[in-house]
Length: 320
Ligand code: UDP
Ligand code: MG
Image (cartoon, rainbow, N blue to C red; front, side, top):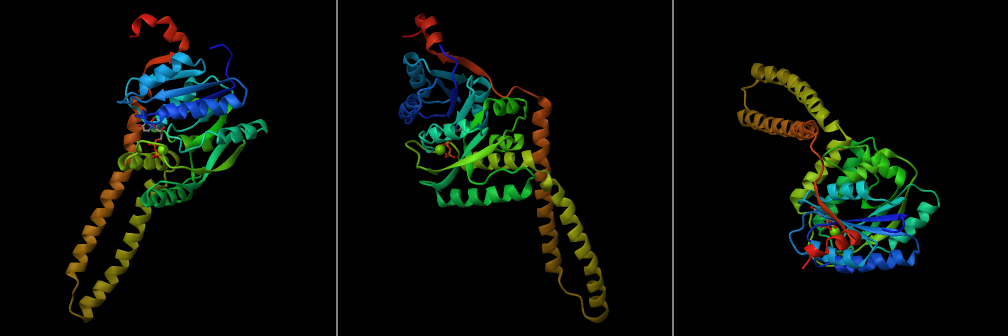
């Protein structure tokens, strides 16, 4: 690479063969129009399709492209983290590969950065092509998360954002394993602002976030920034004890003046409370599991190789 780039555009890619060429072209034309040095940093997150071949082709002819090739699939948030760890720019932009976030918005982010903001996050006004279920659960979740945490995580934002070098360096010091990057960015503070945009439908391909990954992601957000759920069992315990305490008086009263009834009611209450107990144990387990991940302290990811024009020219004999 000749000049040190001012901008690093980090693009996590998992099985994106259908979109990656078009994404690259759109990003290139936007960044070329800006007339300042930049690098496009694609993170291939263990794709099983031809994404890595396409990215290698692109890197072969474009000096501004670097590809971080993971040894396997580590997940979206880790791919973003690796991009930030490797980025050389003074400003780092994270954008999805599927063109749901329009690359043109990057220019607006750059403008805000030049005005002196350290974090410019994209705020979604509209979200096209998402299922009603995803829209409703996302809306509920972001508001719920806000009420549960002390960190001001803006609602309706994703990971599409620009961060200054000093924010990137601050993020690098937070080594937690189950990462909720947008929360971490809020956590570090600095001067933050938003640019609003309409989120489009995926350009091609299908979502790489099935329900299971979404649920894990939701728990990561909650457990990383709040321990209120752990305290919920204390609250429920108090409420149940007080209510059942009162109920003794009712039962004594009934035993004295009426014939006792309500076995079914009692049984159902027991089952209900057992259900609550399991939920609370499970919630505690979510935290313990994450503590276990921290205790093991394994590296977040492994890189099989970093591919750019220079490295490809040095290894021409390997190619066919
Ligand atoms: N992604 C990734 N690793 C994964 C899943 C997704 O790098 O394990 C990337 C994916 O290629 C895309 C971005 O993360 O660039 C967001 O994924 P997707 O668009 O499928 O999520 P959605 O927009 O549907 O929430
Ligand atoms: Mg998407």
